[in-house]
Length: 188
Image 1: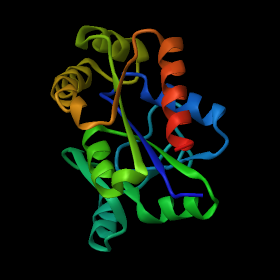
Image 2: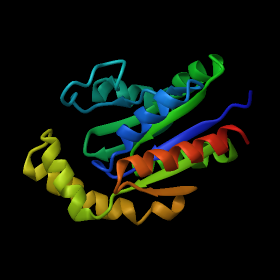
Image 3: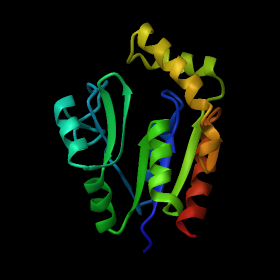
């Protein structure tokens, strides 16, 4: 089996995590790459399942050790990154890696993996709709939501850096579209 990776990126609140979980349920040959982050867990997130939650000091030490495929300081002292050891673990199991990462992380991963990667940008129907989703999610205060909406506007400008763009305005349609994309990529 060829070593491959699938990258899902989107502005926060676009539904990428929902779509990644759907893909994991439909494709047993996929394994989720658990990213590292310095932010606090949200809602029901668990360490070692949703993210590896580590301190800023530990994250910076791992940067110095060249332990990451990619990493980003998304907000001041809020780091996210993909450990090389995580990718190697999944490939050693004979599976394809699936990533759920922010937009800059997705661009970095595509550059790193090149033709081994399928990069998918999940597009919200509109920025206004995205703001409503973030409010409904109830995990952030209004100041954080405003910051995420501003960042989303910037992130959407990078959508053409991805192999595929899927607009998530109807979840079932978006699920079907990503299934088709993955099927084609995995069989290529």
